[in-house]
Structure formats: C-alpha cells, structure tokens
Image (cartoon, rainbow, N blue to C red; front, side, top):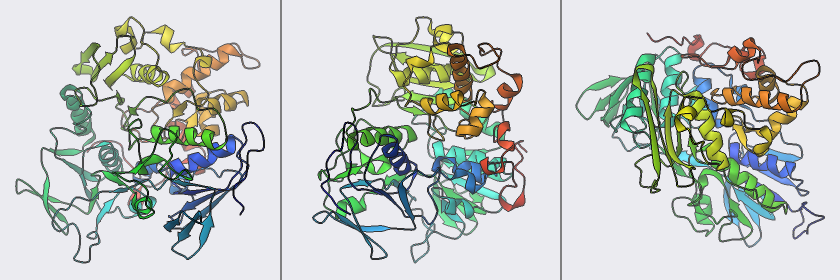
Length: 531
C-alpha cells in the first residue's frame, strides 16, 4: 500500500483506511465511505470468525424468530473484510497494525471501532479458579453467546434494556425466566415510577418473574443465592450487567483513554491519523451504548475522510427497548436525571387502566428536551421524528400524545434528511426507503423485503406506513392514486404491525433467509403466550 495520497477531486478522497472492529458501527462506516466515494482501500478487521452481523438483533435469535444467518450485514462493494483477525498492537510511527497471526496492515487512517465488552459482576462463584465463567453462565454480546443458552430455567442478571430484551426473548422461547435487578423496577435510571409500574405489569403479563431490589451474593452450579438468602434455580445464567469500552488497544498505543478512547468532534484521537467511533469512543456529545450515536459517528467520519461537508445535525438520543406489545421510549435525558437540567414546560398524560403514559418536557422554543412514553405508539413515533429533527412540538400537546396531530403525521417526506435512520435495528435510512419505494417497493411489506426495515423490533412500522403515504402523495404510483394512512392495504397494515406477544412481524414468514419462523433453542417453537 502507498500512503500520503491527495484528493483527486471535489468530495472524493483517497488513502488506505483500516477499520479495527467489524460490528454494526464499523460496518456502517465502511458502507458510508463507499457511498461517499472514497477512492482508497478499506480493510475491515473483524475479531469474530463470522462475517459482520447485526448485534442488536441477538434477542431474536434467542427466541427463534431469526436464524443467525438472517443477522448477516450486506457486503459493501470494494471493502475487504477479514474475519477472525485480532489486532494486538498499533505501530503509530510506521502506521501499521499487528495481528495475533503476526500479520501487519498498513494504514493512512486507522479507525478503532472495537466496541465494548460485557461487564461481569464479581459475584463469588461466578468464575472458576482459572478465571473463566462457570459452565452455564454467559453474557450476551455475540452469536456465540446465544449458542451457550440452554435448558428450561433462565435467570437474567440486570434489568437494563439488554436484560429486558433477553428476558422477554427467553420467555417467548418457552423458558421459565427470572430477572434480578437491584433497582426498584427495571430501567429505574431511565423511567419514572409511573412508567416503571407499567413496565413491571407488562413483563409480569408475559410470565417473566421479577426480583427487584435484590442482588446476587453467590453463584453455585445451577443455583443463584439472593441477598435475602433465597436460592434461584437456573440452567442458564445470563449476565446483562453493563459494558465497558474496549480501549486497551488504544491505551497500549499511547492514546488518551478515560473510560473510552477520547475523541474530538471529528472523532480524532491525539494522533491525527487515528480515529475512534462507537462504544469504544468517549465524547460528551454522544451517548454511549445506543446504536444511533454510532451510526451518526460513522456518517460524520465518512464525510470527513471523503472531504465532504459535515452533516446538518445529529439525531436526538432515543432509547427504545424491543419489547413486543409494549411501545416504550425514552427520548433525550431521562426525567429527573442529572443530565436533564433544562427548564421548561412539562406535559403529562396518564391512562393506567389502558397501559398508557407519557411525560414530555419542552424548552422555551417548544423543542423536546426529555420524554418517557409508554403504550402510545403514534406519539412515540411523532416525538422521535421531532426530536431527531430538533423541531418544536405543535401547540396542542395533548393531541400529539393521543396521535391526533395531523400537522406532524402528515409532514412531507422532504422535510426530513435522506440520511435520517428510520429503522434503527437494521440501519435503514429514509433515503434508502425512498429509493426502494421508487424502485417499486410501494407498501410496508415490499419495503421490508427490499430493505429489511421493520423486520427487527417492529417499532418503526407506523413510520414506514406514513412514509409510504407521503411518497405516494408526492408521486402517485402507476395505476393508482395517492394513498393515505387510512387507505393503505389492510393486509400490509396488519402484517407490518407487531401485536402483543408476537416475536416477529408477519411478513417475516415468507423468505427463509430473512428470518422465517423456525424452531427455537432446543428445537422448540417459540410460544408467545404466558404460562
């Protein structure tokens, strides 16, 4: 490889880019470099022995809703992907990385996308004397972790987003599931008590047992002992107790590290030739642990490396756990958290009998600063769009929360950016959906087949239907007039909408390689009904 190459034209850059880490963010960067016309080589070094895959959908493998192959990310033209390659050192002076196999890869720009590693709490007995996890104990960060899950009884340590998605998936697979969480209710750092109560009610309705306000004090083969002395039996013990940035490689290379690799607004480390993105990077403006900030970073960095202007805005922070049957979202800073210092108007809607609740805070300009939404899918979709676009909420806040704000629901598609991510599970942007629509995929079902949008958690299904209506209104499909939300085909509307207890969207049944219904772990077909 040769280095020091110059730009060959407006907006097009050359140079050999090496990406260390083949997770969704590293893959996204490779795709964006290709999209923006990068003219050098791109090499992606992936430590796992598999091709890059969508890690955020691991829970769908646990419940049998998706085959592991369905998680595979599409290859990027011109990108060399090398699986099974672990980078052990960075030689900054010679601009080379060394691998565990003794190979060297030269770079003009090195991008660290090493992600994060699971944190396993130091509970006595959870590891053997040799330091490995006790048989039957696993984290959930890879497809290999999914393969370790077995038996009929599962205990999940941790009631954060991953813990809840894991517990719900294991329950759908027919297992007995107990969640142990130190807080008063799951997601207690993100939700207020009212939302927490609705979440507990939903999980209990699924048949998930909750041990809140409790912690593990000892682990034995097949038994976990709580701090009140009660034992919990387990065949599999899944630790969903947080992650830590993988920053050891950067630290050993002499780069500044705190929790993660310190970067500036351009994702630059202290070495101008080395960037860092995703969960391994630390920057006060990006929230760690969520997919959207990593994709935003990939876009920012790809534009920088290809000589393009920075994007117009960053999407808002949105947490949407994938819990079938419960639309749940936390936007911006969690209400009452130390990060939520903005003053402004707060609107709260409560309907506990129907499992609906929302509390929204807006600033003096009417823009959302924080929100918690439960059981209100239309409101959650509308608020997410407004928050991502940094647009003010309509004056009639209640109509917005009840899904009766036509001005928001009918906003023209052109008012959003093509790069806006609509399907967060599969990294599908508004522009990709529009292109697929113009190529003939003119229904939610067809868009799912063309782009995989809605085939993850299904949380974007309503927005996909609205986008279809907007595009049809702007450019009617041949042989039919403009469609609306109401006149969209009934079959598509039904197929694109997840219903309580269902682990997949109905249009997932067709193509086998997109996750047709298959037996779950142990050969069982997942049964969504609580027992």
